[in-house]
Image (cartoon, rainbow, N blue to C red; front, side, top):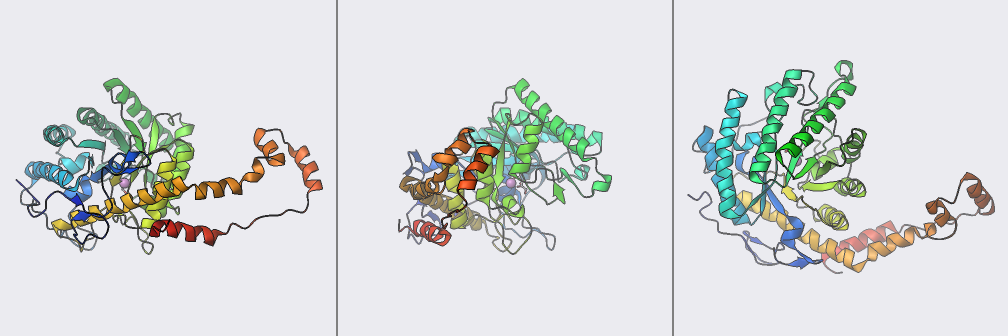
Amino acid sequence: MSYFKNISKIQYEGAGSDNALAFKHYNENEVVLGKTMKEHLRFAVAYWHTMTMNGSDPFGQGNMIRPWETVSGMDLAKARVEVNFEFLEKIGAPYFCFHDVDVAPEGATLKESNENLDVIIAKIKEGMNATGTKLLWNTANMFSNPRYVHGAATTNNADVFAYAAAQVKKGLETAVELGAENYVFWGGREGYESLLNTDMGLELDNLARFFHMAVDYAKEIGFTGQFLIEPKPKEPSKHQYDFDAATTISFLQKYGLDKHFKLNLEANHATLAGHTFEHELRVARLNNMLGSIDANQGDMLLGWDTDEFPTDIYAVTLAMYEILENGGIGAGGVNFDAKVRRTSFEPEDLFYAHIAGMDTFAKGLKVAGKMIEDKFFENLLNDRYASFKTGIGADIVSGKANFKTLEAYALENSHIVNKSNHLELLKARLNEYIYGNK
Ligand code: XUL
Ligand code: CO
């Protein structure tokens, strides 16, 4: 059964093609800096936004036209599995990602939920085998069900902590069963509303206990994928504990978890935290913590997580520059944690949206690759810090200098000369790369 009858496999037609259902830049076998685009980008489709989301928002009901929404319950869950694999094959994405509750409905008890999952996971496994597609990551949704009102691993209610642990245990078993390359934790309700009723110390200690239990259980059952934490500053919690990359890294280091985890960084979460996406990628990269990315973009005029498909070539180029400088995305990938707008309600829009995102990332990859090859920015950077390569600067870096030697130097060198950054020149150069003139 086909759910997208009018759409065949999306082909690369090159820049200038007028075919809305063709790639203009994503040519999976094209080589950039020694690797194919497919190997660099490792695109993944997010089950929750593409197979499950129905367009509802706080002001209106679901409005998406989805040919598979003719049945309900487990029948709908099974239909969505078929949709997933048809979509992956037609769009040409090698990976997908899901939360437990995206793929199978929750039952009245934990046992029933797990039984539902077992049926659907078996069907997903068949689909993966038939299509050769893979699971980039799975995760447990520990934020939608009312039981998680006060958090999951950071709840005040130990019964909830136990339930969450059971849910992640099942998630890790699922990851093993499906050969997931990563397992994600996003702490949607791991935060607080008021410090007056919050034992922050206990909550953070418990969060670390929870992660250690996950690491131990993964070892026990032979899960060898990478663990990822996805930072986000707020929404739905007023203050989320995994606020941004720096906060999350320091938490992991404090509790001896840094060798077990990397970060799954999301563009819209970065901007909600008051950072650019490239800032978050750089912080992670410097700490050897760049694990994977959730590709999307926010809206400058809106203060919440709009999860739009990434079309901002400027931001994506700078993100790809960080990823290339990191030596690639490793076991991670580029997951479209992005949803079509409510006004884009036809099934074809799912294709237009992914094509737009994949083309933007492919173009960003090509531009960033050229920027690295040319070494223009690398040379500029080396030049900017040249004072630390010789003389007093070299003494500072090597550890030879101290306050006394520096004072002696400064007393002789009161006339300080700084150089201009020529920042506008630099931005104009970046534009030339994006325009394709360089
Ligand atoms: C929410 C978000 C999640 C995570 C997985 O903002 O990004 O969908 O990616 O739970
Ligand atoms: Co995300």
